[in-house]
Image (cartoon, rainbow, N blue to C red):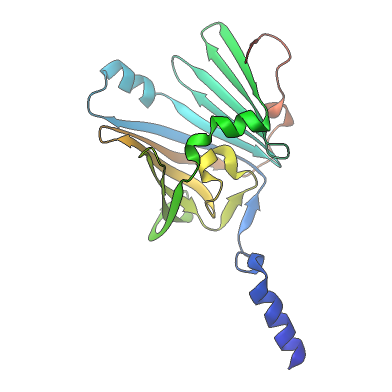
Length: 211
């Protein structure tokens, strides 16, 4: 009986045993559709948001998030190993780059300090994945309502900073900043295939550096 008890003890004491069937996704591209519920927004603003899109690229310890809209294109390239990030913005022909050290990246996301996460029992299926509901509450009153796939988890969960403690891959989320403003993001395509390394290259010219 001792060998059996020894193996059982390892299983119970190892936190990774519980999620042994959860697959770590280290290569993928996820496309999100964006919709908005804004009672008082201008129709042109609503149309601009409705035609915007968000794509998340993950490769090993690197992550890139592209937000494309009629008036602004923004990319955030994040390196998990050192915690630094680069933000690229394009307004028409104007291009700007901001480099964030680990300290500046943390400072830029300080609104997520002291946030709380509540894991719920509600479920739904998104792109064939069983997902569970979670609610993230920020101290400024902003609320994230999300659904995450339980069978997969990204190698870089910080593709959306408040998702870093979510125990799965977030495929749908809603941001409610006020009673009148709700923005929805829902994954409509997911590609679990290799991502070109060039996606994470930092431009060396053509951008104005902003501090």
